[in-house]
Image (cartoon, rainbow, N blue to C red):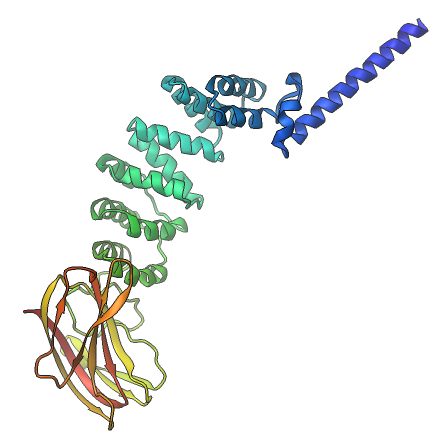
Length: 384
C-alpha cells in the first residue's frame, strides 16, 4: 500500500508538473508567438491565436478554420475566434458561413477592430449599405482615422445609396466630426460631400470652425474649390458667404472667421489699417511705416483659364523710392506650388493678366504697398 501510495503521489506530482508546464507555455505564447507550436493541444488557448494567424499566413485555410473553431469552442463569448473563423470561411469560399460568423462576432465584440473591418468589407461586397454605414460611423465616432477606415468609407460614399445610408445615420456629431470633414474635403467628390455634409448640418454637427477655416486655403490651392465652398457654406458660414467672383471688402468680418474667398488682413509690423464704411461694404485706409513692402489684404481666387482686366479704385502715396500700391497675382498648381503670375501697379494704364490652362488651378490676390499711405475703395476683376 505504501508503494502504491508513493506511486500515486509521484504520478500526481508528474501530472501537476505537466499541467503547470502546459499552462505556462500557453501564457508565454501571448508574448512570444514562436512558443505557440510547443504548447500541447489540450492546453492551447492563448496559443491558438498565433497558430491561426500562422495558418492563414501560409494560406492553409482548412487549418485556420479548424483552429478557429477550436478557439470558439474553448471561448465562445469573445468575438475574436468568430472573426478569425469568418476570415477562413471567406477564404474557402463559404460566404454564407462567413456572414453568419461575422454577424455573431459583431454582436459580441464592438471593440474588436478586425471584426468591424470584416463586417464593413462584407457589407460593401453584398451592398448592405446600412450595415456598412453603421459600422463605419461607429469607428469614426471612437476616434479611429487610419487609412483602412478612410478607404472603406470612401468606397461606401462613392455609391449613391451608400452615401444616403451614411447620411441617414448621422446625428448631432461632435469631437470626431472635424477630423472627418477634413478628410472628406480632401477626398470626396462634390455630390457625396454635399449629401454627407448637408446631413451633418441638418442634425447640428458640432465642428471646429477655426480649424476648418485654416484648411480652406489648402483646399482652394489644390483645386478643390467646390469642396471648400460646400464645407464652409453648410457648416460654418452662418449665412455669410463671399462668392469667388465677389472682390468687395466686407463690413461684417470683424470677429468672424474667413471663408474660402474672404479678404484677410495679415498682421505685419508697421502696417496700420482703418476700415471705413462705404455703402454696403468698406474702404481700407492704410499706412505702412516699415521700409519693407508688406501686404495690406490678401484672398483666394479661382479664375478659369483666360485673360482678365483689373481695376483698382484707390488713392496711394509712396515715399520716395517705394511703389505705392501693387496687386500681386500668384498662381498655384494642384500640388500647392505657387509662383507670381503678375504684379499690377495702381498707376499702370493697362492692368491685365492671363491665367494659363495648366498648373494654375487657383490663385491668390495680394494688395501690397511700400512705405506710404493711401485708401482702397474697391478691386474689380473682369474677364477680357
